[in-house]
Image 1 (tube, rainbow, N blue to C red):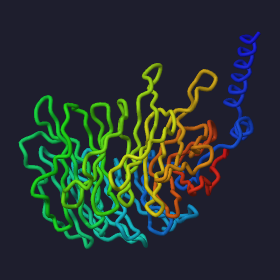
Image 2 (tube, rainbow, N blue to C red; image 1 turned 180 degrees about the vertical axis):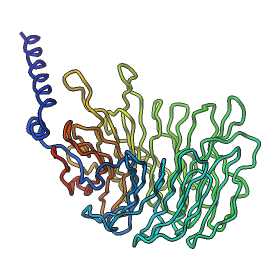
Image 3 (spheres, helix red, strand yellow; image 1 turned 135 degrees about the vertical axis):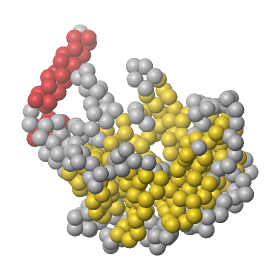
Image 4 (tube, rainbow, N blue to C red; image 1 turned 60 degrees about the vertical axis):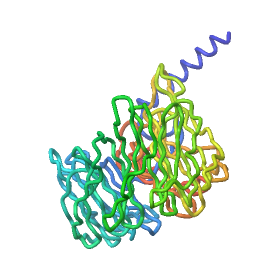
Length: 443
């Protein structure tokens, strides 16, 4: 009897699903109820990135899905465009965006089949200032209106430009005979940058190294030796520690490791912090006032599909490991981590596959979670859906917006049929309240 009831329920559920799929968007919404999502700010566009404008809004870049034209525009706290038409960059195969420290942005545009990219600065007002071409690499804004481009051609190099557009001398960051790879870099907030990379000491031994590049172009006499490992996949994650230094996190030997370095390359903590992750993988790291949040995943199972457990751990400014929160079971990994330094909280957003429905998995959804340094989970129901419409979503950026709130920018397809795909934004308060209803026929 119970088996028959379950079968009847499954058949009824499948019938409702089939009817919704065949119906109009309005009927779909009626069948399934309202969905989470955001305000559509750039219809027909994809690949968003965003940075804060320093005034509660965001500067967003996106690309046209058909002609590849990249557009950068600024949106206020209500999601309304501030610059009339936005600033267009034609023939863009990709775009990087970084805050300039004064409410504007540094933009790097990659061109198809080219080893160079165009880098420029857009002021808070929307006016463009300098523009220059550099070897393709990672864009790092120093926070003083200038930028560094970190690239690799055998050795690792840094090309720079100051706030007025004057080019800085090219610097060769590495000179060792070891094979370097996977350079990552972040701005230091004072015109310089921190760089980390993996060095191959032999076929079986690898090291993580760290270097600081100042606004004046000075380097430490030698890079800091952060860690050694026999794991060839060891990869660093960096975050400013909120007091002039840098936090480095990596995973190796089944553990997640964290250390804090001063701007002089001296370890701040007495010893490296280990998180017993049981084959964990670092997804993101962020810090505020020396306090560190690490988002990491642990593989729960591989079949029938890869499934991970998402966790957030907190390390005090003294280097003491305080707690770990188990957040959710997720697919597709964590997509972003940002810290609101004013209140000492981590906000984690991630993309995951929806629960299989009537025998088929739905498109990826987005969720969001917030926890304070005291371990308090501040959103209702533990975590909140950020975007869960019937079309696919992908997270572009998560930006701290002050007062414990964040702005998320993502691609959104509201409905199965008659949909309008594009870039959307949503503001989430410290308590989890959303500012905007989801745009589209299926809100």
